[in-house]
Length: 618
Image (cartoon, rainbow, N blue to C red; front, top):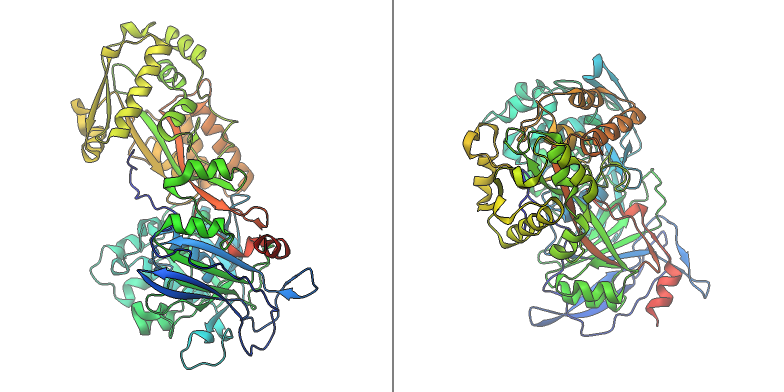
């Protein structure tokens, strides 16, 4: 499998070992009410590591009345979302989250400074209700809401008889955001991808210190002007900074609790949350289920109707899939071992979600082969992405003809920009090049990683070049090396070791086209492994980075994609495909938008509770 450049791949959970169906699952949904006397549960008998245990599923723990669904008999039942995920319950500290499951929890348990809308791919207000940019784009002023609170889930306290209640502690303030950013800028926190906040003045300098003093932290360019006004100063104008503020690492944390409790602040007895949901149960040792409840104090409506979220953690994806088939779970990751069978049996309930990871072939502009754009266009247009995806991944990937993938701000629709596979055009471009014919091209050194899948892919692409361009097998020399050697040999200073063409991949650090077009391809802002000369395309990328108007940025990024990958494009690389994950979703009763990046937003999910209960009773 191709290896990513710069970023470890994290996957949404694939269920494993704990679940084994030994009993039918009774589904009982009751009225959400203000006072709880005897909470109703759903009981599931399972086998956990050889011992039969009981999983209880809470269905009535709402203290303040929330929206509910009527059953056919006129009764009212709580609306629940039942999800299966992989592994164990992760640490969900916003500044330390390092998996997609943790991202899900951070998304729903903690307010973000802003929110990335997975439908529109645009940043929208959350804790920050508005913002303005001054100082030529370097200073950002965020005006915060005063009606989002830190709450304590009283039902988690062992001595508490107030199951499901929440206690309002205090409002979330600008100082909480400042504290969160200070945590990221201190190396001891070990925030994944902390470098993304080096845009903030002073952050990188503090990160380089062994230990930061209070004075050092004050030099970081983020300050609370008052409880509801936050000022951030950047090292340079950067419109993409707004997208970065939607990341979990920017989520505020309760500064007094984190300062006092350290890593223990997320335990049951210490936890404070601020998001659209709060934890009801599941933080006990060895727990395999987590129950979240809608926060009745959350002020931002998003259209969902889910009141309770039951997240079951397991290590056995096949048994979890069986639970889904039994309609006990609303959604689970598709089982790898039975993927084709699952797709064939449930084509309308199998949802493919492309990751923000694109694999590509890079062209060496300093090569004797690929110095001309006509040759680069020819070799890119001769690649049949559909065939490549079908033969390598059984069709389980998204062919790409431009660079920025779905789910990124500024990404054009997959079929609207870029040339893609066009053999006639490929032959015409090669004929217009200085070579005229592939037979006159010197040997092409094609560098790939050392795994079998990379070799298989390279051989398929070579065969396409032979078929469409008239090259010979002997002309295209495929060389396999370790990933480290591939990176070293494609650096600009690798001189004679640089290949003519190579395989690599790129993944989003944040869902903004700047992270693709600038950080990967710009002639000076990126490593520029292709050794592109600067042109007006690079000026357009820079212009987009200082343009604050959304419509103007979108227009610029689309123009850049067309200038690079359209019919007359420069073609610095040949995009191939985006890998992704499959989810099994009971779309009969569940309306959900699965995100390409970041956590699933439970408060946008709509469950048809009446239909769900009816289907489960069959």
